[in-house]
Image 1: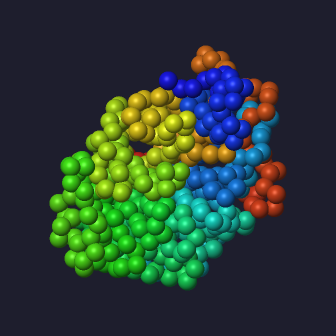
Image 2: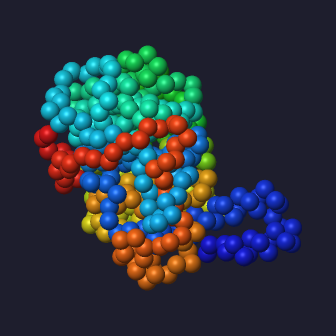
Length: 452
């Protein structure tokens, strides 16, 4: 059971918890009691579905939201909108020209426009809140100047880009792109050029993630259920150093390969029975654990032994055909894992990472949840939906009952206290204001694999 804050206070008064430990316990305990802001209005903030969310890891203050149309918006989470408790964007780049055509892979200067189609992912640079990247179904990866809030450089792929990832270390400026092709392409933001490709997958690559403990180690998830590990200092198939297999349950320790032809031995490894849509390394665990979400299950992997830990996260439904999100939060004695249901349900499930116990089910969206982001400094969860709704979940709203929350959200301007959102005047000169706009270009979620 979750440790109550009153118990923590008693423990501190008795000297059981030291000052710093007490502060950490209170902070992490909040993530176990998240509730939706009851003052939020019921109308959507975005004109189309929200496809991705990302909070800058340096200041933990700015959040970027991407849309189905390709538009991208910026929020300042430190500001609050008193009237409704809503989060308002401080800047928006509308969707670009839908007439942009695909061509051969290339790099070059970008226009001031956002993506012209489904914006699939957003990632901040770990050591610099002035730069983030986005990927889209218009075959581009855009590099953004966050202060000016406009793309300044682009990498043009020759197919849809499903995911993009930047290393959580500062050792290099490589960006990994997962595309419709069975390869992972590496782009260097520093030089502005493609460097090389990682080959070996047999189908579309849907997701990628860098390891926090090795700046040169990357994992990728494929539509065929495979998860490969790569050493990006190599190129082609020789870069593959191993594959995760659901059948490896610790009886034998899988070995990472060092020879030049590793694909001959990893080709039969299957991590999931169905497409892999999300990969996530909990940063506070230092890369020792990897979470993956597939069509069959949510799994946790021991990366030291490359084995399936066999934790059963019961009730997870993942019918998504596009990249999804897994987010984690430190909790007293463990880690919480948040995963949105994608089988027609609107709930966000919270699990204990080690036991698989369902800790909470967060309900408040009126359509499937399609994006998640966690804010560690405030222990807050942000979620975006297919209907354009953006919700804040916090322990600050625990006192509000479900009926009160529903009643408050049913009004157009419910609530008269301070909300948790971004005011249009906030930004401290870091971002430029812009008008929210863009028309929906169709439901990419229903047919993401179709032509475009």
